[in-house]
Image (cartoon, rainbow, N blue to C red):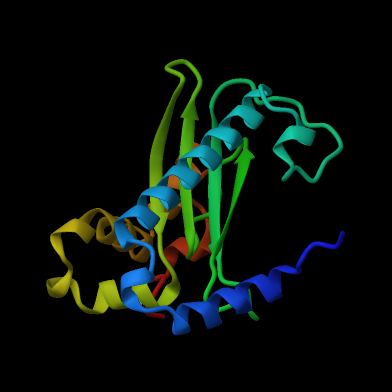
Length: 185
């Protein structure tokens, strides 16, 4: 038995979506709740992999044969991307890592606090166009998007870079921090 390729499945779903009447389409609220649950489950898997409670084989996303668990605090980087051929899909990859990653578009970063056994959100950044829109249209930001706007603003003024360096115990001697804006220039 052969499995269908991802491209064929994505294409069939796109065609089906155009042919389906609105009354037969899944409820947007239900889809959102399911996506949030998947995101949360994947975040917990990455944390458990970083803690050594989920093996590389069970995690399935590890590029090494065997990983050693992190001792102390560590970070989870979530990278969102749209495959070139399948514009109607997005993918997210969840990585456990010892250092705080450099801020970038389409990225969320969480810190696992090992003492409190708690996951803390550090920042969430959208795609480049969205970040640019937020910086250019600050008065049009909806109240429910203000937290995201704050992250974008901190990315633009280099505050997230400084935070990253501080969390990694690095000095603030990077020429990149001298630029005025990350998004506009």
